[in-house]
Image (cartoon, rainbow, N blue to C red; front, side, top):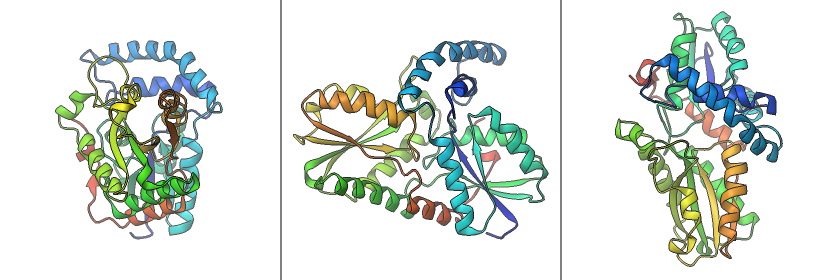
Length: 324
């Protein structure tokens, strides 16, 4: 990649304070790539603003438990700085659901002399509800003079799989857990089943990542489930929460259950609260030992992975990532 090309790291974003929870939820729930009811756009926006306002106190309580904010913003900014230092490329962080950051970000990119950008999502597995949502917003907000290409996804990229293996192996060693005595419970963020039925590749890419990582731990037992279901309707199964209610049906008599965040590269509400405060206690209530392996966060091998992705030859245009 030539020096005239800038790098954009695209991530979910998360509230930096409890005061940002309502605007964060509003931006998320009014995103029609995330919530897809068959109602007119104006009604969708009005309805889900109301739902965001109603849910904000409960979600704020959950964020208060994990320190009053999400670590995602600070992690993404730190990763961007580290990647810029490592590569010498100008690197910009984009936070999809922090609307206060959008105008400064797009103003900066639209006014900078650089006209070519490579976007690397911090979502290893592609979905139109995550990477696709960012691509749609870029199409609306970036100047047409700017050329952008994407690393679409990297569910089995050797550097990514190695970083995940390193992270998990380090955790097992730190907790004196032997591979042959653990059950690795991989938990990915869920997605409505009809998204996949309509052509979203997210589930298949999660399975590909899961298969590649678990192959590194042949003496362990493992499964893949999906968490964070929101609203009615069927989501990808099995559900993490449901499995936690009856671990004896799947744990193969292993007493040490290690939750491995899959699709989460930074710890945030879904890992620090949902896994730590809901799923881990549910497993322990059955007399088993439960642990939460951290996400990649700011690990040096995660920075190395992103550096390697900058040299990808298989790039995708912004338009091809937008759901029709």
